[in-house]
Length: 179
Image 1 (cartoon, rainbow, N blue to C red):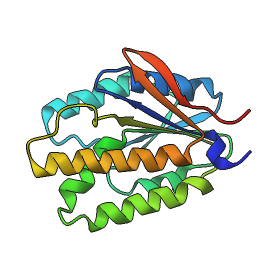
Image 2: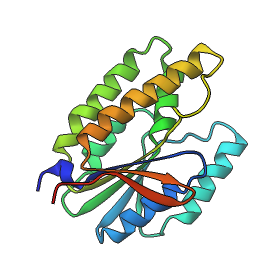
Image 3: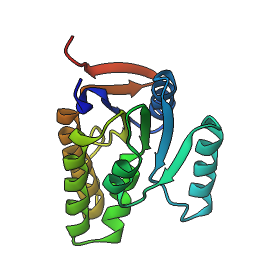
């Protein structure tokens, strides 16, 4: 089985249940799990969200923080017999957009992620917010974020064996590995 056969992209809106679903997938893998967190506690509200996510995770899971260099973190932690759970890609995109308005780092980090995926051993569950189904944002940064997220999701969906959309806590399979 190729490395990509064990990769899953989990999409959903805010409070859709996508993180809970992804955590259940990671737990059901039977593998040692490392949670790759992309959030940064830049204010009290985000710190509270991070703490809630931390409390919901099993105590035995490892943790790596990767707010910007996601591909490097994945390459450092991926191993046969291990499941990596990345939550979430849209926070990672936001971090990169805010760190580098010109977009050079975003382009480099995205390319590094897409390049690394086929080589990553073990199981990989990527979580991201589906933001492209709403109204057109009223400012350039928000439109760029929506566009970058959509392009990233398309590229990841093409490279992952399984793609799941979670709506109202219910997983909907968009792509399954060939049988």
